Length: 242
Ligand code: CDP
Image (cartoon, rainbow, N blue to C red; front, side):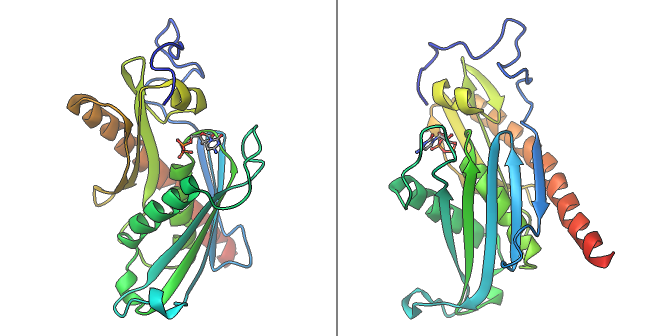
């Protein structure tokens, strides 16, 4: 969140700079089964973001100190590729990727039926190939699609999506300029069927009414992305049967 209103982000006709309506998300596409070495994998494009996720396991949890007697642990590694932005990102783990990995793992552990796999570990690798705001959300969507592709049971499909506020107006799915110069950002991990929120962060300020509208937008987008994910999973199944 940068400029706080000093950059114009809405056009005279009330649309956003990229022509989207206030409650319109960027185009999303999902493909599963993209990496042969992984048990499950997915590639998500969300606007100009590209996220790839790979799932390995369930396997025995090592080292033993991370083992849980009654459930699996989910080990997430989120990483932005050095070439994912116009300024080269320094390779390796940093504080931001550590934070995103941790919150993503906690969210996934509340969605996956971890109690089915005691003492085991499920490894989820999320690689951001192109970053244009909203990569933690695209990463969550990709991780969920990869887990479903691996056949790991979940309570629902979790979808990552963010709304926010620009020029004092709530909008769905911030792009890079809106993320940089907007006033608030509300990324969420949504379970569209159960109506639950498994992950929520907020940057900037929203009034209670603005928060409610931003979450309404997030749920609307999550339902749309959920349908795209279900189609992607069905398509892979049909490819396998053909
Ligand atoms: O990507 P997300 O919106 O989840 O996280 P962020 O920390 O709010 O980053 C917003 C955007 O800033 C990213 O999507 C990247 O486009 C950009 N960024 C960057 O260029 N270099 C970084 N080291 C981190 C983020």
